[in-house]
Length: 343
Ligand code: XLS
Ligand code: MG
Image 1: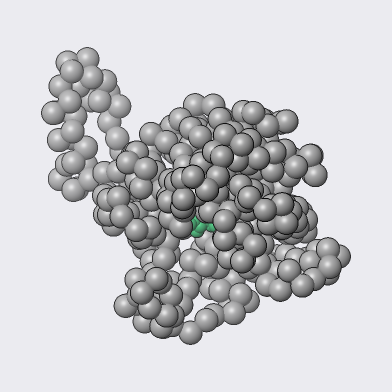
Image 2 (image 1 turned 135 degrees about the horizontal axis):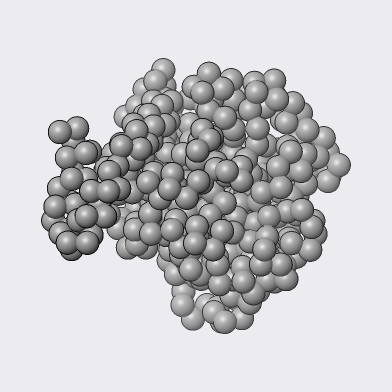
């Protein structure tokens, strides 16, 4: 198995802003973050469209591409690559009621414009992956939308992106809630079903985020397995989450080590990464973290992954087969716990 390649996004080093308080750490310019990512041994960077091209709403299509090319050169200088570009459709007033599932035509058109520009930015950065976290695609008011119509409209938006550029591949990052109450495409199963009904299902896959599976009451490793079974796991966002509550983006493995172990295990066993897929770490530092040590959650997540990978490689498949044969899962479970505890 080749070495796993790790990526993060600029938003994973943030000021600490949350619903109940403003930022408490100074903003760090993109150039500085990129240099630090390379220093930490990361391989690539993930981008929102406006992480790469901040003022894009006010720029021409040509200006956007030129700006993105400069960002590509910055990555190149530090030996990094771009993994994907994700249109940040949840920030603009146009997408308050969703983008692809917006009720007003002008808002839908805005969402499409940003998505097509994301395709352009992706190509300028040297990647063909567009990631769609469908943040506000659903509704806060159940009667506010016709769900069947809107789910078809979501599919139509995918088609427009797929038809715009024949090389572009869509990675859907499903999440069941937050900021939207009722997501129309909240799980891997939903995402694959929408993808299967597009003009080119072969170019629609998923990125599974650990916390999003947990928020759905599902097991992240099982969600990854579903996508792996059909060759659809094109990305992962590893992190952790304490139960079904607000989205926490904790460091990978800090809440549930066994659950994290099984994510690493399913990725390793299925040669994740062989087609260029990356291990994305979608983690955020705690609000208490000081500015002079605000990359530690990334360092920790990568280290936890690597330590768990060593455990996975030591997993005794013969012992496991024997336990399965005897249906002695108590025995197998204790073996796994001892392996994790280093007994
Ligand atoms: C939020 C998402 C976000 C995406 C990138 O819940 O995880 O960070 O991964 O748009
Ligand atoms: Mg994510």
